[in-house]
Image (tube, rainbow, N blue to C red; front, side, top):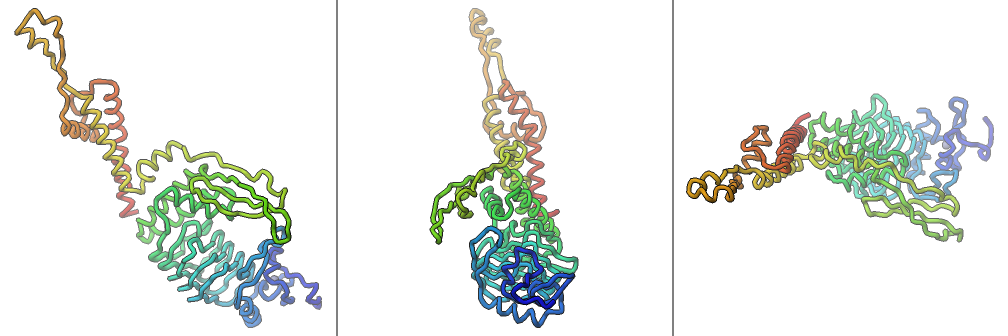
Length: 425
Ligand SMILES: [Zn+2]
């Protein structure tokens, strides 16, 4: 109890000791001594506010991982802190990152109308009341890390008129989140999905595509329940595409020898992700640490089922794509029928009447092809399984006939599905 400040080590997790460096022992809880920041009790409010005010006044330097990473960063460090008070960041501007990793918030946390110019780490934090980002100005892009955060049964979150990315919400249950007028900041494009996976590689080395896919499905469910089908559709596209792209992500490193401030030789690694063409510094390490860092993942990118489903309708989520492909099937088939379907009339009999001597040699047949507009109608009938006459006259055209009979109705179904998803559950 009477241990001096010098020998006091806070009972929080070892990695958070930088957060409360220099603070004296405050109280005991469950047999452990804590500083005022990490002490997990509601009876500390006044003492807490005093230290908190001091710490939030300006960003400080600290090490993120006391174990092996010696790089100090500038930001607000509240890792593992137990907040018994309401946190009000309304209309505040943040230029530096804020770390709330594994913090516990007993009361409301508000970033409403805040200007966010750096990352807010709320990963693995526990929320017992509410969190809101209503009308937050997000100039930074990928600003929020809420992955693995936990919301107790009475807690909720609100996002109103704010730009978001699905990768903000990895392994979080968004069922009680309220999304109003949210802009999911991506299009139904492969490159946007790759960007999201890329964002996650910083923190999730293993299977970020699976995490992303799962997050997108949960978010889509939420949007759908609020009748925002367009948004839900986008999210579902990303869920499928992330799964397909599992193998397209490959890390390769280019290594440069550099000198750090203390003139030690270090290795700077650059990270290339296929499909983005963007390179990104990931870390510097001491020489010798970088062994066998290259890896790639078994490819799913060329899985024919995913590819076909994606090509034909963007996983049943794009009306435009499904329609264009249907028109393509119909029109290309019609071209084949134009040349490959004809009536054969034997000129033989006509000539034989006029001139018996030539009957044997002019055993010629006259091909009467379909006119172009007739071939379009012919193709339509095949599409609608009407089996038009005459039958195709060669194997190639016959194959096209059968293919259109199979693919046409499937494509019509995909189109119907995409239309339906746009307007209802
Ligand atoms: Zn502490």
